[in-house]
Image 1: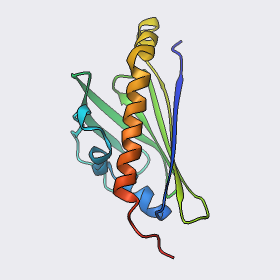
Image 2 (image 1 turned 180 degrees about the vertical axis):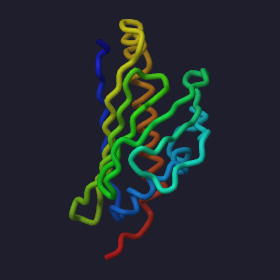
Image 3 (image 1 turned 135 degrees about the horizontal axis):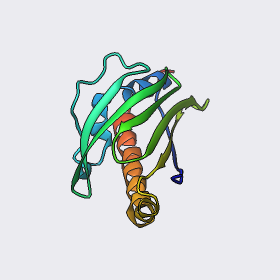
Length: 158
């Protein structure tokens, strides 16, 4: 059985909970928070409204190799949580949980938790050690910085 890896990220932003959830829950915003070097492009119209069972299809490039990826929204619990899982793509498992929580000081915590594993057994594990783990860290660091730049300047209603 393939080894399951976990990637976790958290950031705090001064933003209403509902606004952050709305931003993340709109597939049209994925391009703005995905690193340009991935060449991310939606290939299906974004679901409107988003809900459990919604499908999102896109293409991107991993080390210049084109990849088609389809995810399904498994859980949709506005404004606190949603989960997307890969139906087809480069991973043998990809389960991405997004959570949003008020911190009581005018900020919210946005958390990402990704459970993933790679195909190809030992070869996949070698790829994980050599570049996948580092690539995912770079992608989610970029996402954190992009979200901070896009959302942090909005006033919090008081």
